[in-house]
Length: 329
Ligand code: SAM
Image 1 (tube, rainbow, N blue to C red):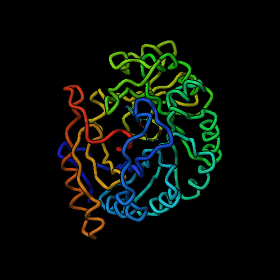
Image 2: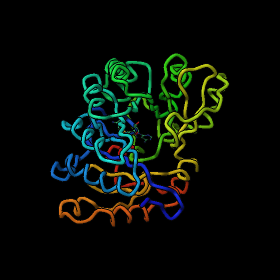
Image 3: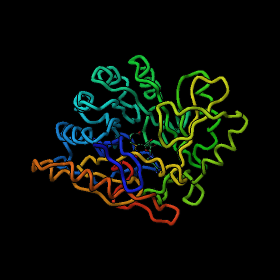
């Protein structure tokens, strides 16, 4: 049995937010003082996450990505990976991280069955990194990448949320990383999710922040980017390569159509809700059924049936029930 939604899209991918807590406070993602974190008792245990994943694997889900909040702040993250990686039918477990805790965890995670990591990197400048993340140390990120490479967590993808007046001036320098490193830098448009407020002194105002992938590509035209294969199969990125480079440069345009047309995923929140669409509110509670030992497959099917054709950002219909850190990006 496989999962196909009303628009003919096969659902083979599950993104699991394992916690809403984060050790950073990126300006476009979380307020400086944090948010009202979910109650611990509502957070799914490693065993519960594994049960949802096992049910999903029975209906054709093959790839899992762990995210958050920051997935590496969960004390049992290695156990979660080990449980998921051993589920029959699950071909790949990967993780999205800010890399602050990756140096020590890369090898244990790889030993547990993690295949690869996506790392968020919005700037190459240490001071700016600290400002954007409100306290992050870029040297820890570089050590995390080195540890991921030693542990053969590959390919490494670097995610950059591009914001005018903040880091759009670094597009060229970030793309240049791919020339000598087999890394895949992906430039992502800023999504209007829970970040309309003022970010503080020295940060761009709301109306000045957005830059489209078309504009990003124009700014990188001096590289004469060539179309390239997306490194790990289908995903939301349009992928290119600087001629002769070891890595690739991808563009992710949540506001463009391509993003939804190829959507192959469901999301599971840390407190046990299946979310059919990142950018539209509406969720199916699976925690209740998990804890009552009721079957999960009907709820999984409900979530698939609820997948909309596309998000409605262009008609100014923004998700409001959760922040990005509570969905997992
Ligand atoms: N803590 C991990 C990290 O930093 O990668 C995982 C969670 S984070 C919410 C996942 C991804 O979402 C990050 O790459 C982050 O930059 C991205 N993100 C957060 N808010 C965003 C927004 N408003 N628009 C676009 N991307 C966003």
